Length: 353
Image (cartoon, rainbow, N blue to C red):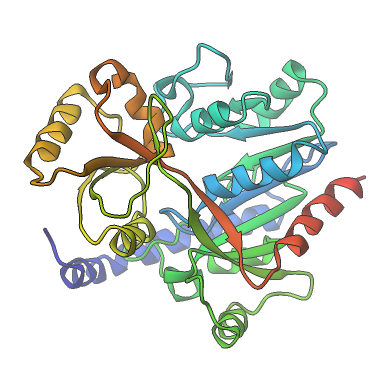
């Protein structure tokens, strides 16, 4: 396995390409700012969740957080691109939908919130009218991973940035992870620093806020990832991690927080990692089984994420009673500021004109 220092040294060699990338996105954003390229607005509250970088900042758990918060007050729907699906164009999730058809994250939303319309479409400007036609009662639309998609002007923008790689310290692709201009943070209404240590101090909080330099209308929040009790992928029976040896199987962009959690909870785990949004094959499942069998322990389980579960569930017959468990995750706002965040969202919706 390549060391982090080697990878960092290699990425430094890519700096010339980063300057070219920066120039391209600078020109693109300038054209939107000067209205040479147009942005469409819609006559209902549209909330955008996104980031400035590639990789996992916790967008899916934030979508779920908003759905839980809003579903009892408003008729809410989600719209995603449907990344890595095998179809194209607009689609509305139904009972026959699969992750291959709509993407793993939208499928996850659909399974967890079957009463909420979940749609996908690469061209969100065209997808929103179709969604409103299919579900005319919708009052709020949540756009997943659309901050850089400036063809739509959302009414409220939530920008996420990882505590371990705050956008102010990052650089542009391919030498860094930024896919949009750092100055793009000015378009956000709130900024959420995610994956923070649960014991983040007030001094560290203020240091990061000073580093970000929020505008007068912006508020910076901080969240930690909170993991729930693992449940079996088929039977849904729960189990505790304490005292178990774990084979972590996952294809998510940034599993660092989960690995740290397992180090603290289990004492021993192995990891079999796949690319982000990886579509598991039967060969992958066989490899997982071989790795699991090689683990020399009586009290052992296979553990994966909810995002991976929608791509592993097609092997339910093969899984049977094999101890494949799924660990849920959610955002927990630090410094008791969750209520302030919730109020910002509901106030925007209620005051929308």
